[in-house]
Length: 104
Image (tube, rainbow, N blue to C red):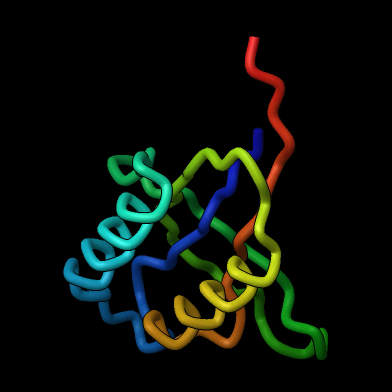
C-alpha cells in the first residue's frame, strides 16, 4: 500500500489566495480515481526554503495537504498529474511524494 501526499499552495506568487474551485476540482479527481481522500485544510502547513541562487531571501509558503491511499504506485500517472497541478496552481514545482505503508 502507498500513501501519496500532495502539497498544495494556498497563495500564488503575488500573495493572492487561490480560488476554492481549484481544490474542489483536485478533490473530485482524486476521489474518482482512488475512492477516498484525506485533506488537511484547517491548519495549513507552513513551509520555507532557500532559493537556489542563495542571494534571495527565504521563500515562505502556506500549504494544504491532500492524501490518498493506493494499492500500486503508478509513477508515470503521478508525474503527469503533478504537471497538471503545477499548471493549475501556477507553480514552477509542486511536491507530490509517496510513502510505502504497512497496514496493521
